[in-house]
Length: 67
Image (spheres, rainbow, N blue to C red):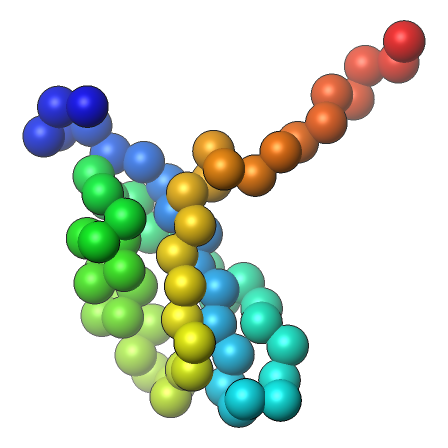
């Protein structure tokens, strides 16, 4: 991956330890570490706990074609 290539990362977080983790948005960044920084900057309007970033490509999406 070159320095200019960026990926989409989905941002997940929860507000309290007993709350479910929910998707709060997404960021575009060249690495996971930078995506995490972007997420903390962009979604700081709330006191999120357990914020995580996951590359969109890491999620499996089954084909919609019928066999």
